[in-house]
Image 1 (cartoon, rainbow, N blue to C red):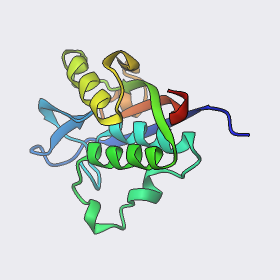
Image 2 (cartoon, one colour):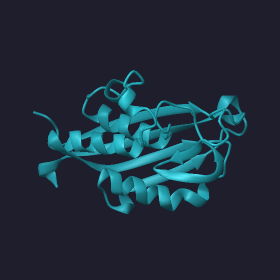
Image 3 (cartoon, rainbow, N blue to C red):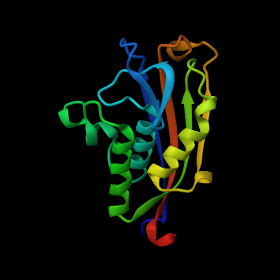
Image 4 (cartoon, rainbow, N blue to C red):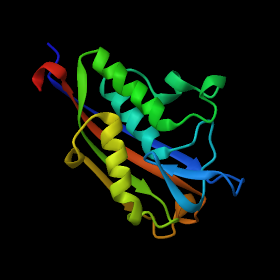
Length: 166
């Protein structure tokens, strides 16, 4: 018998892009005056980690298996759209998101002013109330590639609940 809850975790990391005009998108929010991340899609590490966590909770593979770099249709994709596809796949299987706990690791830029917008956007996409999404930021105190400002990482943990347990 399948328990009525499942837990998933996801991690994503992208380097900063060489193109100074590429926008930085995190949690579906464009961060002004910041260089974006390199990647096949919009490289939104927050949305990618969240999608991977949801897929992992139901043992459905990972983001690369669903939206790999070998698919031209996902080039430049809005990652919240990819996340919405994952949420729909969960619903088709009888599951919904319970909550999301997200940590973004970045030495730069300063992200705290964008917390509320990211929380609201992610809550809307995954279909939960605002208080079911936690968005946190940290640095590595200048240690490692993240600390040198070479990229951004995100770590997500999710609880998914059987839809009939609502």
